[in-house]
Length: 191
Length: 226
Image (cartoon, rainbow over all chains, first blue to last red; front, side, top):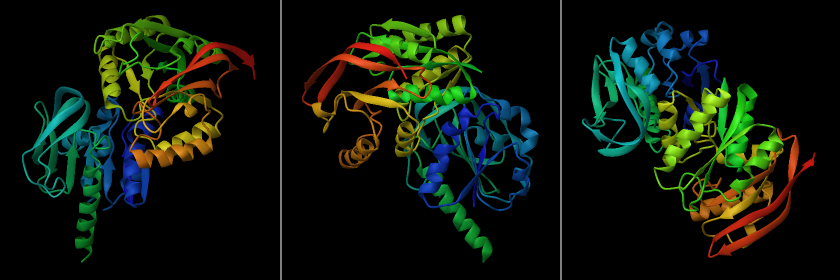
């Protein structure tokens, strides 16, 4: 079971179809079952080992940043995690990093700095940005950058990935490859 | 939250208006009428009837004219959204964008500059599921423009129904176009919606068509009771 965590403001249901459903569609297309939980749901505390995708949210939505204490479960769940945009910001913040103002909207060119299992042979690509904060990560390896911001990171010791861009727009490979990689981790942990 | 809907009179913007009405307060529709038929941002046939559609929906309309010069037309959109903020107190804007990064990014930036929320409920949706829902929930929309192969003049004026959606699906697969026509292949005009208090009856129209490029131009329309 893949867990998709909805990071959008719970008072604005309109955001779910824009930021969660497209990710759910990708997961569904690769044949994986999923469950959508809002980050405020107590059920997130029961996640153990299952792949987790922290979905993005609207440019103006910062409600999740005021509730970072609700994400302490990430440190103890033992799951492979992909953080998308807001999700990446949360991964950075719960692991001791910070964010800085960095507005990027629209398509930007991303340059890979490090070869990685998820990015494979990709070197440069264009990605859809919709954020006003960029990450200042701690204990992460930087995999890719745009001219302005760190774009893709991998934790040095935990099975965590973060992308500040929105892969549901023209870069579904990020989600697909993350799910494949998660499955490999899970399979090897069972042996 | 009070929101304004960026409204072209086509199926996508009308559908998201209805979606927004489920949870937010839609206080106005916002239409940008372009004098430039080639505009990438605002290019809809029959946009002059947005007022009639707004009347059918009983929602106020803010209408702004633009010359449609690329990037300059965004100043006109900014002006329209600012007017919606001042007159109707909108805190957010709803658009019918599905795949168009060009349009979505530009509206997002303007909303950011005005400190407005920007909602795109159809963003990267399952297009077949969306069109099925459109028909199932009682929207009535006709094809008002065709702009690519293989669409010919026989498509103009046709109403979207399940049979047409299946045809469109086969065409999308064969020709690599978008099922919803959002790639600019098709334009639509909504004559009825679940939230319309009256429907639109087309009284007079002309077809202009040549080489997979045509418009169903409505020159006369009235409101009639449902």
